[in-house]
Image (cartoon, rainbow, N blue to C red; front, side):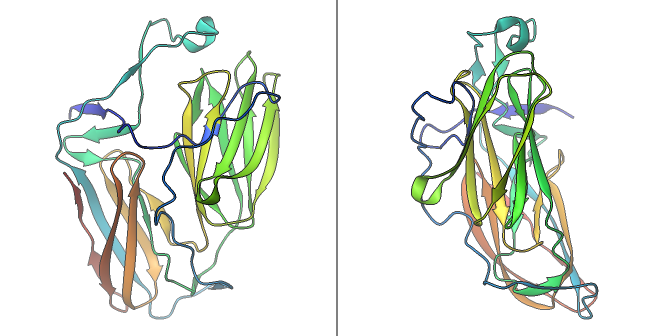
Length: 258
């Protein structure tokens, strides 16, 4: 299968920043629009979902964009990958199948157990790994530096441009954890390395998933009934679709970006 990386749209934002902690943080440019609607407050989790079903599907992209190429211009021994340019990696398409799209059911207020944990975002060869991560309200984000150069992870909630943390990571192997208090799209950037960009999609319930390299996803133990699914991609934007889940059944939700 052919793997194509698509180019970023000019209007979309950056989320995690790295650089000198005393440097003025650039303002995220992501629009505040209706990304990542919050789930109802007070989500109720249970070990069993008696009427649960499954939502499975594929997210595709049929456009003709190609990925931008980035030129690391600092710390090149660590960041250059022995090549003068590197793909942006913002949009990954495998034979039309879209990876790193978020599928979320924000309207579910009760369902399976919500295991709040730690979302790790590592600095590896001057890339954020993973490029898109999933987080949970009341969980933690761990900023890690696997590089022998300084990074400074700036974490900003896109809605309201609210700063979550500005974490200096001068030492290789360093790890710093900070709380994720609100649901929403979180931007990650690095001041020291301007090409670095990442995202955390912080959910208020456990019904959230990233599409894999083949654009596929699956959500299990979904309460029976009609739900509104939010599908988000950093370059292609957001879609909302209705999906009906029957007890013990599997609903198909295929989403197409053009």
